[in-house]
Length: 446
Ligand code: GLN
Image (cartoon, rainbow, N blue to C red):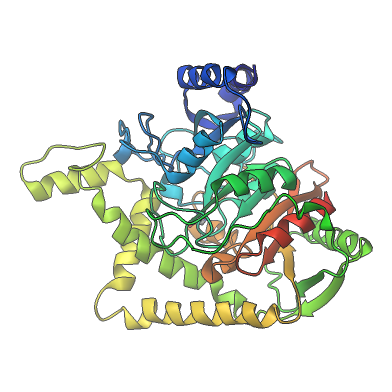
């Protein structure tokens, strides 16, 4: 019944929302029917969910919203998909994203546009816009996304749902189509922090198939949820860039922090002096890693091939036709930043700045337990508003990117609506592997 209800909702709404690239109706119903004969043995048992289409699913098309992966059907599943299947989860489909997760609005998908359920003239955010919209529109109770520079938290903020990026290494990236391997993390979209705790519990843990997954023991995220915020020290950033910050967003986030203070938290000022270099740093490191990761799409191993007169000609035609404009831009920037003669000036300096940003956080966490900022400087913008201005698009990630550079966990929690009726998110960033505190604070706020 749950699977049918989810599929019915998708049928009713997705023509307008465009959250899904692929709905696996037959597979979902079959999985649900099989579970009907079993005894529920997990909190996620029988519950339908969706996966961002950069997560590999055995036997189910996986495109990363790119033409170059058109027709690709993976021979294996991502570890997170396996874990959710073992928990009794019912996969209903694969959600839309910016091509290879590069973008902040889901407009870079090669296949379709996704609309914000709160206002169809607006974007759902990105790059995991399909997952955020699917949860916001009630098509699935939860969905997974990936976050390299904000791609879970920012769309969660735009769509009025909870989005959690775990600590780097908390969740196995095996089977996640790589964008920037040192930044990518998989995490949940849910309607509540409690649901996020259940999903995180199910997908966390060391995986021998991902050498960067951490051996760290997995906390009991659910049992700590009710501990409240009494005595919790919330850091507000003194030198936070106000550039481009929408005043309504600023007010709603301030009010949310005041609410937490009223519930017993202590607000302290902290400094992140290198934070304003984060966007520039990210847009060197992420494209550098992407240019290397995307070298594998050569027309031989996966998906699309455009034939040519020679091997090189085939490569060129396949990649010219297969990749969209933003992906090409990243490959060009990354290849340039890594090339000999420029490496020291760009890539190496970006890595040094990354260390300074990490140290800023270490210092800040000596006097606070979580750091509160807006998730994004604006509410959802209109479709088409920023597509021709990549720099404006990149600046939307100003508050989310630093946590990826430092590998820290971050959560976006809905904290109200603007006068125009668009959701705004409060972001909390915590110490490495301290998702427990983030979830408890978010739960107390709800
Ligand atoms: N918007 C950022 C980018 O375009 C972040 C994307 C992400 O987190 N996957 O790179």
